[in-house]
Image 1: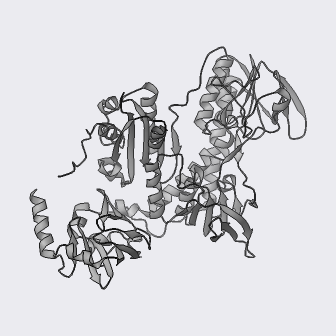
Image 2: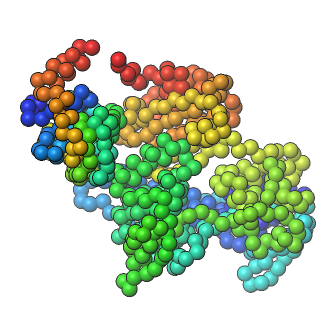
Length: 129
Length: 464
């Protein structure tokens, strides 16, 4: 279910890298924990963000939860479709439910992130805590 | 006791009733209809308009609750206006029947002071009548401030007085001023289908509200795609050949829209009242200066409501009217402002009372803050109203509640528990120990009070 061509952050976000462009979203685990998503508060294009800091805030019927950026960079694109249909995040978290695209300022940060297998192991450990 | 009251708004009419209940012979001079701005141009018509907008919004989302509406849901603006007119006339009649019941006389016309014991009513046709009075209450209210440079015409450049009688839903509208009135209209216009841009000179919308509460509304603006521009002013206003209004902003940006609504403050109605001749003191904004018994500096002359520039809220005017009437009838009532609730009818609503968190900090009061989100309430899920927060602010030393702020469905009704708590000097602990019925939104007030001490029940403990 979790794709292996992306990298994962321990705050349950993912990043897909193409050159310096990083497409970012929340993981399937995150969307399941949140439940029905009703709104994603988007940063504005041009916003600069540091790795591990808040990039967006996701509201579901259960909780309001910060979305943490897995890498540093400048927001170059936001997913406009989410404004009318935030439920896409629930339906397709790794595809059409992407949230923003960053132009990375330090692509080496990606190396610090987890692979799919590492993330799934991490999830298991979290669940057992 | 012969009492003359100039103005029959929520201040004047309440003062009239209370004084009459205490045995005064009361005459009210009113140049328009009884009920004042509140009933005819403010509280009541905007909330009637909002009730229609909310019905539209609920119908649009009825499917979420399993109710299918065949065909599109449409707004019939002339029927909305008719309904508002009916609500207003019913309320005006109710005031008149209270007056009749208590023998309060109404003289149509403009009132002014001749001396401390004579008020004059000047009717539209110029006939005058002098009313000898043992006491006089000035309750003439306020009107929308007309910002200089705006060519107000009632159809494209509007005041809130024009907006409450909305003739047309514009394609787009720019609202100047993101205070209470501007924000309320932003949601109304947006729901009715207009594209809305709000312009605010200060760094945020709803500057007088608690910052955290205002941030929720700013997010609701983003959700409903109401554009908010802060820290900008309007430098110039002009009109295009096609009738659209063009604003040049202080940041150089140019905006055009079919309509512009100016919702930037109100001006007190103290002109032409004969204040100077009688020596009634006024302040910098021409407001009539009063003490906490609602007395002016001239014995026997009282002032209440917006014209005093104290707190421009209908319910404050009414309470000031009660205070003035009691004092005129031999009592010793004093106006207190520590627990004045405020109701802002945004979508969702805001109810607030007492200190804002930033005010407590400014005043050097150490506080503990409890919070509880609506989305953790069963009732909020039942209603499908997830957005919302209750915030209880208590003095860190005494635990007394000093502020309550609520944003969410029915916040304007829920806030009164906070007003009572502050008025009675209740502690957060006492609020927590008050049993709240389930399932209600009021449970959030109990939980927020409990959260002051980390004792809320429906909160996940942070792991790790």
